[in-house]
Image (cartoon, rainbow, N blue to C red):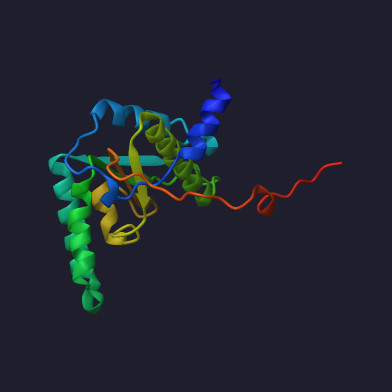
Length: 194
């Protein structure tokens, strides 16, 4: 298989693997996670600003993340508090080998629109997804939990103008994803030519 065929297969076989589909307790080697993160940092980004900040939780760090996010939810939910959501925030990180907080550090170059920094981080996450697929591992990008809470940002080293863009779960696949499909290309692509 040539490089183009390999990449086509890689891109078309990428799937989200949710925390309940991961093999809890089975660790991915840190060296593999470092390779995945290195691939992420080669994503395109305007002005070579590299606006990502990844905080990696593993081992006891997963318990710290679980405790932080569940307690922050409990403090801020008020009358909207739901016990199942609280328990999910406590339990889901423990199902993964690694959880990576995805931060966007706002570009120091004020001429770069914020949306371009966000897009660069999203490209980095896609590189992570493709890397996981190449390694035969599972991953999931979630924007749930404390993602949009301003009070969560300092825990992840983010400042006022930065953004927390979610969490990327990594682990070994216990239950593969199925039933993936896409609408026909003709429904989503418009060609303008001669």
